[in-house]
Length: 498
Image (cartoon, rainbow, N blue to C red; front, side, top):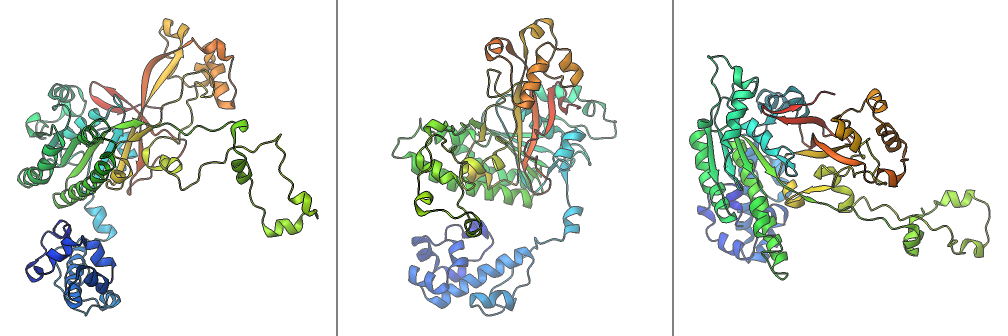
């Protein structure tokens, strides 16, 4: 029951002071009150059934009032054993029509049309958007651009200040000044348009998890109500959690309990940030770190267990057995020949290894066309997993992955200064000795001599892609697509033309 005032901050508990202590003692939450029978709750907490039903009725009425549902709906309360009209409806309706949502849809631009189109118009207010990627992928560059663009008038921003909460490094003011002076839009604003400035960026520092929790739950609501910023940036959300709940700071006996407590804290944090984003009509953008993910190694045919080989062959249907030729019982029960073992079956669709590619942003891309992953050419890219796991992924509305991949070329082209990695045209491949053959081998599944290529490849530069992993307002990047390629330059971030 300790989450009642978190879900309904304005709920009046004056009539239920004799119930709440017993509910808290028996760890009964609002979810339990709404999903369990009143008799079961009363028996578990040793309370009168009628009083429990009255409490449940008031909670439902408050929730219906917030959602814009008329209180006293007999169709809604009859299934719960409540009388019509029980409870007091709250103030404020959250339910809106599609037209109302589109009319109130406001976004913050990345100052690049192609990147905005990939994001569905920009970063929307009222939601939590996560930008994740490895070090050097461009997360901070995107966040700094948003801090300035949010100060612009519509359609690029909301003409309001911004708030930056740092958990690792202080706000890079030198880089912000460079963006203001070199970006074409920011440096050429007319005199009548308010110019973004560093003085309109509020900053807070959270060096550890304890101070982060205090600032986010106590100081942040006051700052949002006082300054009404258009954008709240947290860079990064995972730094303090990873530092204080890692295997280096906990013992093997306390590590599971620490992870369970972290999961509960992340759920409360996500609910808190969503409430603030909706109440103050601001966009909440958090940066997240990633960790390496190792794909499960497939067994060779000689290493495949016999039970796995047998389970990989599909079970015939009844009509297939009837349609086939007659077989003797001994032939039907004869063991499969050992000379042709079956391959290892694919992982189940319900396993995390199979499903995490749909919400992490890594794992469904083909290797680069310049080399083949099964040979001595450089690998396509390491698999990554955003920090804080599936629990945090359920708290955010949108995840944007910034993928960084090394562009490779041969040593001879490196010495001549030719950027062979970025030229994927047929003419470019034909003009580069050896690269066309490597590209063709990657496309058709073959390759050149592995020994000849082992020492000829060298990294040239980095290429970056922005891909929407999931979001309710825009379609994510389909499997096999890398997203929108962009580059980091002195004016911020911009898409790279095809």
